[in-house]
Length: 410
Image 1 (cartoon, rainbow, N blue to C red):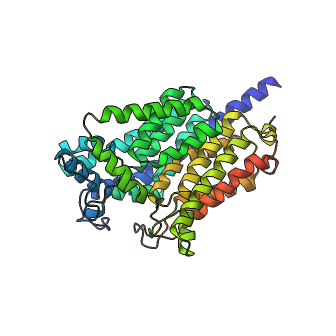
Image 2: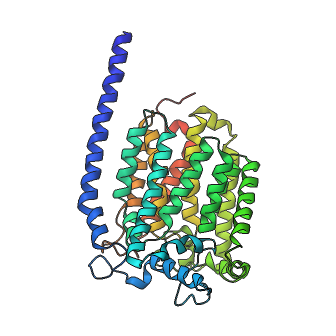
Image 3: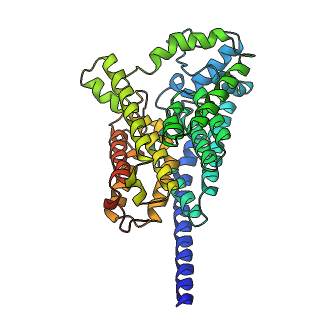
């Protein structure tokens, strides 16, 4: 009998390997037919091809490149936002300045290489943090989500920093999962200093984990990095960004391409103070929920603590996208790796087929083409709908796990 069980397990492993090989082959085919030609035709450096729908001036990397040049010439890249809409923290300027040592065309290729490399490092790091039986399927699902992601295609066109930041936050998550909390806090502080939104992930790292030492490490590393940067960045530039730009940065609710929940309240006629209150209240309620469920007796009825933490990290990112007024299409590349991790956990567990089908539907909505004009990113709010659906399904895991698992783990 024991031999039969061993033989069955070996057979299942072989079948999983065949499935992974098949899915990786599909990934390669999609990449070869669509993603690779897109890179050759439009490497975020030219508008002479049909793919370039937005014009050179609106390409994000072009803004980064020009802002770094202004800073290197001792100018203020925030002084004229009508001509150069650079809104990122001052610490990002030395990072972008590294690319100005090359011509724009070569620099744009290096930028693509940089965020792809960071994503690959994050994918491999998260894969190695999993159990061996989950690694091949996780890599396959992550690759498939990446190359079929509509937000990724838009990001690929415009060259924003979102995939680079998403990879940094995942690396921070992996470091914390491996109990390297100080390293995790340093990585997260770097991400927050490049673009402010990753700071909302402190709800997971501090509130859910109940780890005030993590907050202390985060604050110390942030102060230390900013202090060191003052050697090359004038303090006046920091003050200008904090006093003049930051108050306006997260109250922009009129973006046509917004996939934020707050945008719906804006369309309903709410005032800006009310919209700010809705956003702050939303983050506050989520922080209370995260604090509560970590000790809630219901959550003891299922799953490992690691699984609960994985779900909360994904939910934190989804809430961040829902409540940030500047969540357009391409920031949704953040969900690729956390969603792949969630899907592989569901595949390996006793989850009801109805729930798994629902989660797959949300993945389709958050990654599908949102406009009849393929790469025109002012779109229908399908990513917002998918986000809301997935967030509600994640909440179910904490408040009513017996409706999800066929066999509740103890």
